Length: 332
Image 1 (cartoon, rainbow, N blue to C red):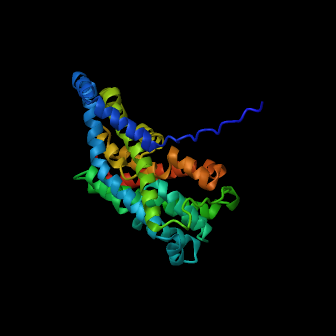
Image 2 (spheres, rainbow, N blue to C red):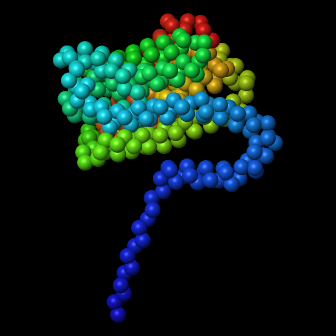
Image 3 (tube, rainbow, N blue to C red):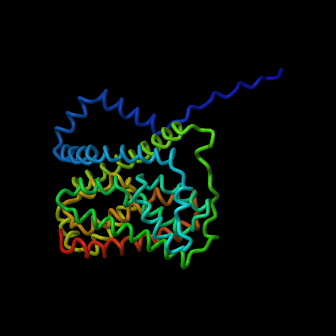
């Protein structure tokens, strides 16, 4: 007798939306227990206050950023930028670096756009300048930085100058020393042409919101843990060692991998540190972090990331430090 094989049941993929819904329902069901626990432990109450403060302040800018990013994915073609580029490669680096001001969005959205610019004929050096500048100097990021650092307009200017300098320097370095064979991955079209613009907009906005929101929650939680777990004596020592503070904040920016539209509020919460290390945190983060390296490996290849990420890390620290000393001076 031949046994008939039963058809396998289709598996329902578990997405970040399912996880978010589960956490939300759990928080509602166990709300009284959570409130009672938070109120009974002073450190947890302090951490919860810091977490909510960072999250609530950053969320409007995060939502605005992903909406604009979705609109760009649906309605703005990289061909428009390509037509505006000058023929000289170094001048093209300067133009596309500045073009990042006009295209709000997080660094996640800048990776596929910059790769598509390359495939449409833009110089690789200019596309890489756009990759670094777009998530760092756009209006949403600059306004969120101004809100996070009230009374410190120099912080906004220092971030703008440091981030733009990083983009330009890396673009010009690539124009001088970069090689085409270092980019090995092929472009994958994640937005087929048969989709309507509304479908493209909603899908891009949903993807960016879920991905960036997850990193915002992680960053706000990390800021709360730092305030609660790390003793004040350690932070006071770090504040007195400027070089060490700069290196620690640069590494923290790479590890936390925050969305550029929300990172200013995390940096502002670290008020025990001088402005310069926090500026380094804001310049390094949008230029090189763990999620960016993963995305760049998929879009450009691992060989590219192995060369580009370490160089960007060093250049971003140097540009942020120089910008900080020139603009912030001795500000604390």
